[in-house]
Amino acid sequence: MPRVAVFFEVEPWEESYLAGRLRDIDLRFFRTPLHPSQLAAVAEAEILSIFIRSPITSEVLERMPRLRLIATRSTGYDHIDLETCRKKGVVVTNVPRYGENTVAEHTFGLILALSRNIHKAYVRTTRGNFSLEGLRGFDLKGKTLGVIGTGSIGLHVIRIARGFGMEVLAYDIRPQPLLAEVLGFRYVSLQELLSESDIVTLHVPLTPATYHLIDWSRLQQMKRGAILINTSRGGVVDTDALLRALDEGILSGAGLDVLEGEELIEEERALLHMPEAEEKLKAVVRAHLLLRRENVVITPHIAFNSQEALQRILDTTVENIQAFLAGTPRNVVTSIA
Ligand code: NAD
Image (tube, rainbow, N blue to C red; front, side, top):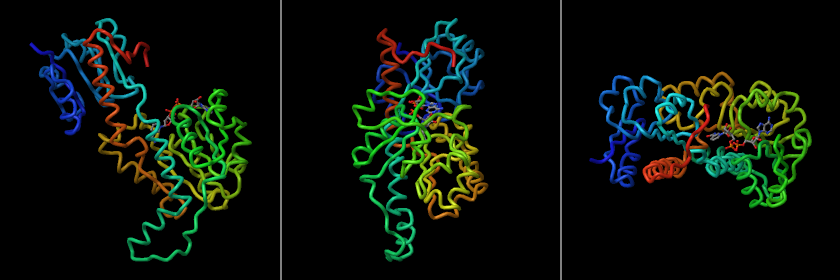
């Protein structure tokens, strides 16, 4: 009898992808998050794969007595009762990272839109206007990029920036001097980074320490006419201060994939299954009057959303399941979130 694996919160393309790779397993798919009313139907499953909108409580674990593996297709695992899993001998695996180049590439999408006025040109040409007026941009080569947060994404941004011939300054509470030498960038104080950079890009997590890290006093330290890019979390920037900096010409533009007020979204992929996300984003943008500005480019939290990044989540999940079945589990979550 083949093993039974149940997948929740899957899209149709994911079903066929998984079916092609997990051939010896009896796979059952559900588009929705796991709901207690479905437990009777999945009681015989040995493998459960979910995303973050399926809470795995002690009740769920009680009613899935054959369960041996939970392969969450997310980085976070706070939706799973790890303590009960441990007691019942259920292994939990996750996808530790999947989108570093993906978010870094989108960061440069925002930078290039602003440096070459691509967003303005697009709107004009769709209206039949091919005038060059007001569309002169600036080169990235030779400019200074300030990278705040040099983790997985920040470092990737730095690699791309070096490819463009940019100078790079960085700030992080945990600097990596060896990497700075290898990649050719320099760690400096936050103040120096802000005052020397033509473009500042944010790649820190939202924590109490980074909440409104970019506030009015920090914006005033920035080079006049600089550009601010935020693909990290909205709450890292004080939006009222950002609007004032744009009004007063301290900033000549901003590229925002995330907006203050949407920080409840902790896991990007949740956006793909969140019917209320669109309304929430609209309300946030309206509240901040950001859309009326030609020098602000907003994307609706899509920096993570490439086919390849989503594919990497599935690939890692398939590998996690196969490794578990081979007796060599990988990406096992051991601590309580
Ligand atoms: P990471 O953990 O690899 O790197 C974060 C870096 O920030 C670390 O080097 C850390 O030392 C540094 N840091 C933490 N607190 C700091 C502080 N107070 N001051 C200065 N530096 C500080 O994370 P990552 O994978 O590079 O992701 C960065 C952030 O990007 C995530 O936390 C997430 O909020 C955001 N993100 C956004 C999207 C999107 O779709 N827009 C997708 C993925 C991640």
